Length: 327
Image (cartoon, rainbow, N blue to C red; front, side, top):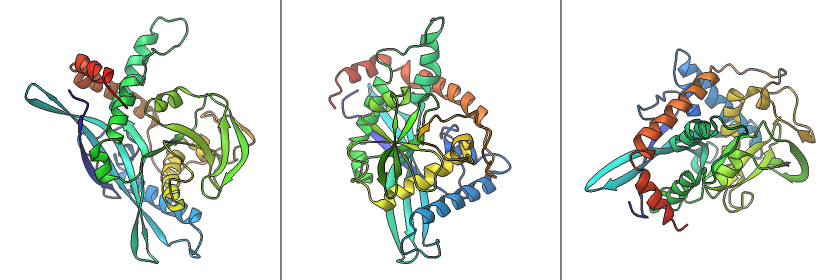
């Protein structure tokens, strides 16, 4: 296993006809929506929410609030592992690519890649390795090298020639704020990202993403009720255009309203000091069906899949590769 791991990209449109492929992580946000009796209505409502939010934020030269339509593409990343003349492909991560149709100018505009982030190895780390490590321990802790392998694999992909061939900017991943941390509003305000919040201390997720080469900032966009966590490398505020950022906000805020309505569809907005809670009762429910409990159960199953198909059979090889990783 050399330092030039190879990667394969596959893509599929996320639209109202989307059906998850057999090797898609079914804990992935968009795949979870596309199952069951309500699948097509779920997808249609989700896409409508995303378009509405995009036009709400991109309001200049857009008097009827329908100038833009968001197009989403699910990118599945396979890692090729070559050993003794044979080659195995392992599903590494799934990310989401945005683009926008400008109906006034009749042109398509590229958006940001990343947004949503799904990873079998992360499922292994958080749902298999961490519980096993803390079994019978008096106090919760994490191994010293927790997230190291996952971080190196992600950085290898994001700096690879395969990535460069398909994407011209580094990824931005946008997720929910941590329910175990407190956030303080600042005076810093961006026209699209909104008001910046500072976190009282880094979360386990922040440390994990740092090993992927990503830092974090927290912003509450205009007309939102809670800040979002943006993970990126470089300069979040100057490396991306307003429309690129709006694409990420409109897509990921919509997902969070569906998955964490207690936080992102709350009936009151975050104050100067904010502690998000999934126990909040004062929120509105979207008309979109989602099974949060099933999702957490599946994370364990998919973590065990990663253990059986990647971590155990390639343990020595992965450790050797990671020890020589130079980024």
